[in-house]
Length: 506
Ligand code: BLA
Image (cartoon, rainbow, N blue to C red; front, side):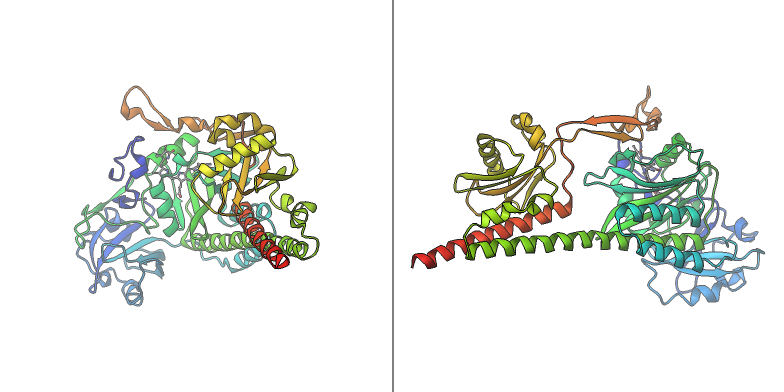
């Protein structure tokens, strides 16, 4: 894997961004040996930053004076490997109060990062207000809008975007608050390659990152390797970590000077980001970052709740449908009628048509392909790997022979209803030609100059429109689980119906 800062655009997916070996200059980093709390590695600016003429390497924390040493020692019994501790402290060499964060990196020792403390401000009022706005949001749109507004008020950046990742890792700006003179990015999409997998994994652990000034000169660590581990210092959780030069170039190309980005984690995966841009240098003090982390957590929790409400509602309607089918089995036997009678089964999946394929016959409702075509679709489904449901938003791209069907069946979701081949319940959605707005040409994430050193991340962020044909609206996770549940209900009902008939026959 390429070392930090050594990646080019052909291998930047694998850049070791946590081994940055340098920090941003708005603070100082100390690596402390335990248990004596002697500084064994530091950022090169640490001596001047802390007012120690002779440098800090070899000094013990107690030598720095103030209340630093006892404060750090009071946290030394904590794990600190995932959640850093905050130490607001003073040292003798410096007049200002310091905000310190303390954590244990993978290779051993304690990392202490020190910044000049932000102005003393009580954020509890705005944070409480924000929390109640978040929990009062009853739709994803409303929630994302609130989140953007809250971050704009609290962190004060020129632009705040709520950015969601789709299944393929591409991102879309769902909500935005910006200064009036800025161009809108709302609705823009950005390709997955703009944020490498390694970075995404890091952002699940380190939930808030700040870049103070794209024009900064990185301050190296000295010595370069941690004397404790003999290896490069793991800076995954460092708040001062230098950012990847490729990403810095990207932001410069975009005209952005400073950023604060918070992770949104839902159900254990990186659902999206709250990305704040500023068009001049901007520092966010520790207190603001902590508030942003807490609020991002609250937004994530609310997203999870809204998603599970949708899920429970869908489950409830499936249960009702099942009840009606079961009743029909015991009265007139026409459970298929119950399935197709009311439009629930179709509406719950926002489908244009639905087909039940069984015993070589097709019962349908709404707009569906013709009988022969349904047979071909069933044969194609039989050839797919067996799964609880099979969903595609683009049937023609799965097999070109279905290209003629896009008007009624650009996409489908199919649930097997028995172990026999050809037996499915299938929902169809018609084609919806969509124009996707990308924030720059997604097929040109990398621009190549005359020689490899002229590789650059995307230079143009001008809106780039892509017309997507032959697809339907994408199926959501909720759609898929609803289809699976209805499929299972139908399978059960078929079983019951069989046993009722056997009873009558006896
Ligand atoms: C990181 N790229 C990022 C981050 C974002 C983006 C949000 C996370 C930054 C952070 O958390 O602080 C992309 N930023 C965007 C997008 C918008 C935005 C899409 O504001 C839309 C408005 N970048 C490239 C290419 C590569 C690349 C081609 O464009 C190389 C494969 C790399 N992006 C890259 C790297 C990081 C990154 C290495 C990690 C930066 C770091 O944390 O050090």
